[in-house]
Amino acid sequence: MTSLQFHPVTKRPTLLAIWTILAMSVPALVSAQEIMLKWGFVEGNEQVLQLTNRMEISMPIGFASQVMDQSIRMRQTVQSVESNGDATVTVTTEHIRMEGVGPGGDQLYDSDSGDTPTDPAILGAAAMVGQDYSMVVGADGTVKSIQGIEELIESMRSSVPPDVAPMLGEMFNAQTLTEIAQQGVQILPTDPISPGGSWQISFTMPNPLLGEVINTLTFILDGIEERDGRTVALLSSTGEIVADTPEDLAGLPMEMDVDAEMTGFLIFDVDRGLVLSSSTTTEMTMTMSGPDGSSMTMPMTTTSSLELLEYIPRS
Image 1 (cartoon, rainbow, N blue to C red):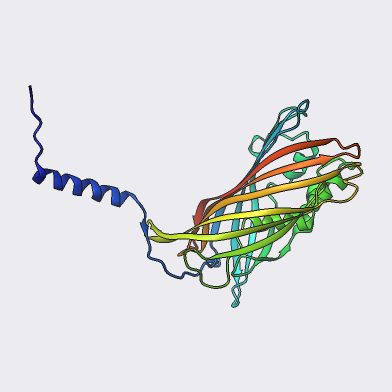
Image 2: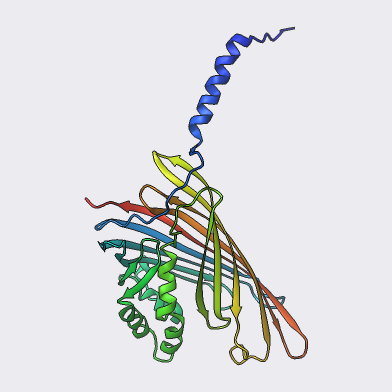
């Protein structure tokens, strides 16, 4: 029978080595301190971002459910920065991919394929590829104005059949495209913030079915750490959605109640002043009630994510 011998003297260095390896593999946390989250706009800098959206709609029994995926790759180039921190940024849509599975059949469009989509809504979105517009962004990330949006909308309208153009104009108007632009530029607090601190933002998105949809998000600074020699802020978010549904509900004789919650995260590079990644998931339940007392519930999950693909500093 072989006996196992334990040698405390030789065990200690082994434990120390393991602990050292583990400590080196975990990002170092920075002690609690106030930091300023501020966009680092520098004239000539570029960044390539990927914006993805996934929507899953669970239809009632007897109806087919629907899944839609969309990804947009865009390039942001800082043209100039004013003394007050306002930056003029050109945004160019480089690639779009849209895929849908639902009652209308499966659909797939990839702008790299060179194919022309058949769906009018996708056709209008495809017209964005290669187009650009400029936006003026404040130091806190607020999109103050957009130039060239009218040309972009007209390009989209002219790409679809005449009978579809009015609908497309409602879906992709200046307000909607401004809010889409704002998704790529996070609004930050104007004062320094410490771990545990929070701030709130609110924005409105028009919806053909729900009317004015008000989104309110609260961000919390969970912690600060060092990654690859840079200071990174880790944030979480929660939010709610309030829909001011029209009384006639697009001409349908029914009422609609909306219950929604949002959760997400954001990782911000404090030193370079840019978002590394972010994601927000919205769990929404729409209940439609008819005049006869009947009702239909439709759960919906939407996840919107943003990822920095490439950062190109001014040479």
